[in-house]
Each structure stands twice: as C-alpha cells, then as structure tokens.
Length: 85
Image (cartoon, rainbow, N blue to C red; front, side, top):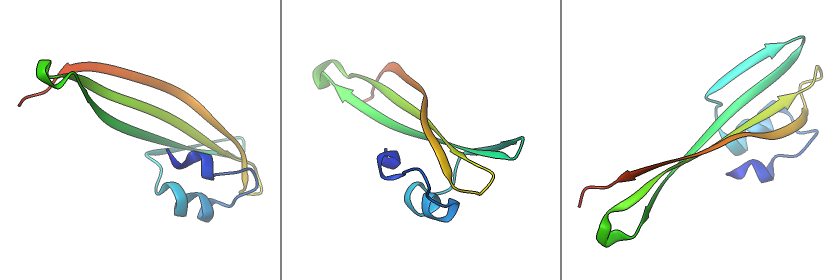
C-alpha cells in the first residue's frame, strides 16, 4: 500500500492525492482519522486452485491543524479460498 509515501506533516489534500478517498473517516475531540483498506487476491498452488484474499487496514490520523500526526497499521487478515478455473 502507498501509505509508505505518506509522512507526518502532510495535509489532507496530499494524503488524498496519494491514497485516494478513505473508506471511512471518524472525528473525535478534533482529531480526524481516515481509514483505508487494500485487498489483494492471491493465487498459489494453481493446480490445486488454492489461494485467498489478503486485507491490509491502515489509519491516517490528523491533528487539529489538519496535518498527519500518525500512520498506523490497524489490521491484517488473510482469508483462504478456492478459485474457479
């Protein structure tokens, strides 16, 4: 995910230009948090049609001035599955 390009001090406009629109945003005590999710479909062991979906969740936290104060990985998941041929 492009969150490695997001750094502290960036504005909301800069973050949006790198990551796009967040899937969700929250505000608490003047602090905005934008939530992003990236899904990857992984295919491995093709003859057996095994694979899965990998999900990475990231939160970008803005201070009262509207600039990034923290970027955090808030979750990772993998869901195994079979794929049709």
